[in-house]
Length: 412
Ligand SMILES: Cc1cc2nc3c(=O)[nH]c(=O)nc-3n(C[C@H](O)[C@H](O)[C@H](O)COP(=O)(O)OP(=O)(O)OC[C@H]3O[C@@H](n4cnc5c(N)ncnc54)[C@H](O)[C@@H]3O)c2cc1C
Image (cartoon, rainbow, N blue to C red; front, side):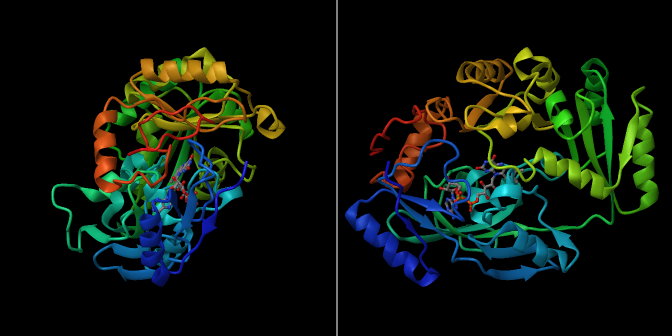
């Protein structure tokens, strides 16, 4: 199969390029660093990939206002570095797979709309976003959100573009909310049978404590980190002073008969790196999933997950799982899956009030990346408003199912 053509225009060339693509009605895919393009529905080889990686400037940082405006192709690490110089940070996890694939771009992060455990305290990337600049399929630039002119009345553009997977337009810049870096941080690891962990997880969610993260790990993920193969809760705690941090640890330990291991920020970082895929190449199977948060322990108890590394946020019910398959012996040592098992897992997530997205699957598996969302007709109508010729990201409209390997239908 021929690979898609990849273009990397300078900022000054972008408008003319997009207008030319529009005039010809050519299909194209907005991209960032192109680090994770293949995840999800297949990219049509007929599609031109337009990378935003040359748009990589930090445009404005207002430490006093806790805002930063950056071009979309900027790596998240560069944003974190600029903020750290002022004792601030962008409260999102390193993207999954950063060890092997790099952190991608900030625009890609917004376009995928996926976040990790820090969501527990800081909410998702969509909640960090206060302004957005974009280029529509017809080459017209638009801006929306805080500190910029809102010129598309009626739509909350920013939130539409979070998780749009390049299907609505190319994000050219984003304005994000920054946070002060917490002066004191530690981790807490509690491991044991689900029957004892579940009440602790429930208590934590209802307590007045505000951990930065409360992550559930499956036994297979614990084993991959060199821990006992039992489920665990991994907490990130933060405070302005060490005394308060110690009080939080004591309050949590008082709620459970299980041992609570206090972790240094470095040890917590090591464990988060394992949950983020480590340095290993991308796995044969990579799944994003969500369930009703109250039913996460039920999900973890399901037999289908027993041999699979799975991390899931206690408060959000959103997580990631991975496994080996044909051609991936590295991850096969941690657990394997086949298409029937993944279809069962998807049914299980649906039954628990959630969903399962197949980001990566072995060649020939042909599972849909996602199922039709109940709001599919609405999603398609919005898409038509933004992209009347159906040029953008053909076959990859989130919430609209299409079998892997099938040629995408022209959208409009
Ligand atoms: C904890 C965490 C976990 C994550 N897990 C995953 C994961 O499992 N899989 C995953 O794919 N992402 C995940 N993400 C999001 C991840 O940050 C992005 O996928 C990554 O930043 C992609 O960057 P990239 O520049 O290489 O994007 P690319 O690989 O170039 O593109 C990725 C997607 O975003 C779209 N896109 C990229 N840039 C733009 C733009 N400027 N305008 C419009 N659309 C654009 C593309 O069309 C494509 O659909 C996660 C993020 C966090 C914080």
